[in-house]
Image 1 (tube, rainbow, N blue to C red):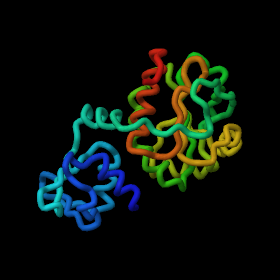
Image 2: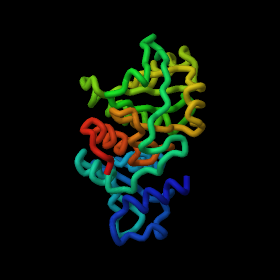
Image 3: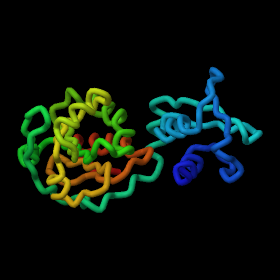
Length: 232
């Protein structure tokens, strides 16, 4: 937990506050209503990038503040771009695959040239994978009426396992089950891994792991790909 705590404090605490003076485990965090949050809860909220902490002068208490959508996005995109994965190369054409999702719909990357393809490699027992699903659902919802964007989640799990999982945690991507062979095609062995493929079938963005600004960059990459612009 220590690396996460360090990251949170380096990125989100106000200027002038020295992180080493604060013990996150004993920090008393409340919101504007006076509700107090356990350390695991406020850490998760701050890590989402949608909340910030305002540390009081006593260095022992803090106010949890929800950011506006605009402010949250601005902060996330100002943070360093997530590190590229070792499984793809920006600007290279992606090797195609063709497979059915758990609902029986066929997806063929070669046939999807001309569209933006958003790939997510994951598995059910991957904690970071589950953590990012709500944010990924928001992106899928935002582009649900755009036929030029296709969301594909390649899962290692079997179809029946995924169907049981979805009863508890909905995932709005088109999900391909038993996807170990597809992951292996690209050498993917760390999760979650994301890749955004542009209209020309080339990798525009890719990263592995769940950072606070990962999903913001996925969304930014989708928009750049739709507009046939470089990712900046």
